[in-house]
Image (cartoon, rainbow, N blue to C red; front, side, top):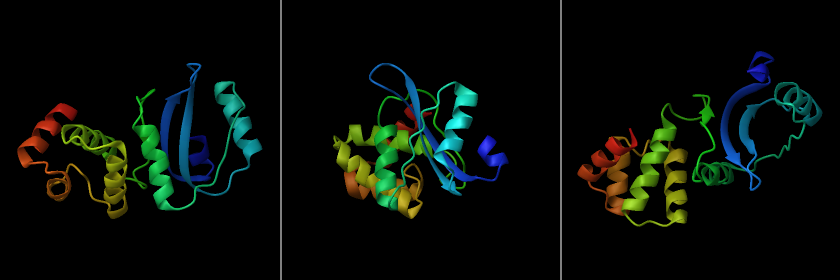
Amino acid sequence: MRLFRRCLLVDYIRCPEYTETGLRHEHILFRGSYIEQAYLSYLWQEIHGAEVVDIRRTWGKRRLASYLASYMAKAPAGRYCYSYGWVWQGFVKSWKFLRKASTWCCQDYWSLLTTWRRFVKLGVKPDSNLGVMWLNKLWGVSYAQANQILVEVQ
């Protein structure tokens, strides 16, 4: 919120993750102005008492979607947060729906990521009527199966 108030941040997605040592850290993707690493370290130290901030530029939508999906596919270390300007409202539920549908249809991880990229790129929700039609063609998911998965994801 501090970066929003300072007009440095437009849209963001945050995925928490646990390290191998059990410490929680954040993967945050944002659109906005360039922010100096020293300034982010200062704010992070002020808020959380930790000054380590690693910044990397992302290259292309495809890599961005892969990067984000790889952390969302892991067991969550907390709640995903995002601004609605970047993704659609309820996209985490859409991701959980697609992940569940992929396990029902015995799809591998790369098939799941490829399909997720297609949905994100076109702005189609996997749990919408159009999305279910696509899944029916791609993976053979029936409307009855889709409704059952939606009930489980709720």
